[in-house]
Image 1 (spheres, one colour):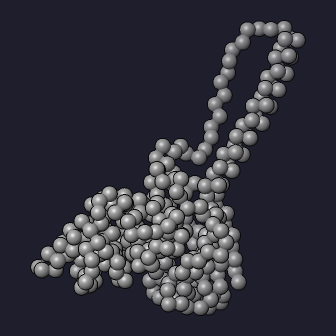
Image 2 (tube, helix red, strand yellow):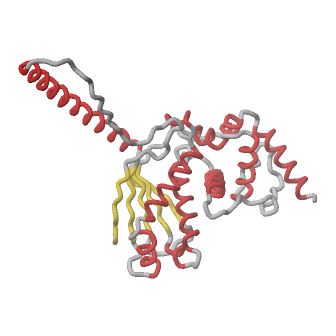
Image 3 (cartoon, rainbow, N blue to C red):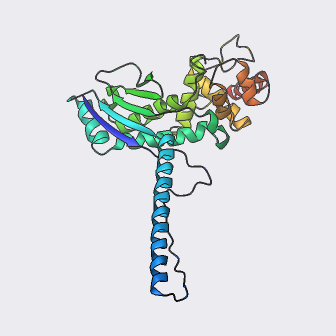
Amino acid sequence: MEEHHHHLHQPLVQPSNATPSSYSVTVIDIETTPRDKDSDHDSRSSFSITFRISFIALLALVSLWANHEAYKGFSVTIINDAGETIAGKRFHLFYVSNDEATRIVIKASKVVETFLYTDNDMDSKKEVARIIFKLKGSNSSDEVVVNSERVHEFVLNISPSILEGADFRRGMFLAVQQGVARVWLWDGQGQSPKYLINGIVEYITSNLDGFGRLPPSLEEAAPLQKGFSSAACWKSQDPRAVVEFLKHCEDQQPGFIARLNRGMKYSWHDDMFGVALGMPVQDLCASFESLRYNFSSF
């Protein structure tokens, strides 16, 4: 098993008013009046002591800043369990040897965090200490499965089947994007409906896909199931239908996904939809159903 550790202790989402992570020291020459030798010697000694104290204080501040930045970041570990298989060799060549695996995890994390958390949501932000990017040794039905066996540590289990296709770069990017979205998305302590979580992940991925994939159009969305309550139009096993409704909610109430994510930090109940929307969910469901019905009539 090949394992590479990359410890990236850096802020993942810079605030809008953030300053570059660098320091500059300005030295100002101050002209003084002439003094005798003893006075000059005493002055130099005093200056030397002051300089040393100031330098030590500066080092302490830099250390505190570095620790603060490290706390805001997370480490990335890359594991190749596919060994000498075609997928394993491709993974090593294209993602491990050049550190591309680390870069796409960091890139995905930055954009997902920006999508799920606003400047006012930092107190509800999920704590992530480590993300393990693991290429599995055997294929699985799901391209990516996320699990967590340790607190604040998440594993992206990637199926090697992705690397067996011709367009493996796009497939890998999408799998990592979906996995990282699941890492940062709250799930109501496991109580949030699976179809809702799947829909949110699909919605985030489709909007952030650097390869140009667009959210499903209304023509491609699954038809509304008969007997659906107007207050539960987001309850569909087809992620495409959920994605369309989430898009409708976000269009009507910008920031809806971030508010819903914040609400799912500790628990889940259906009323969270209405709270995040700022209106009864049945009202938006009715307008959504009407929109889809009218569209399908053409």
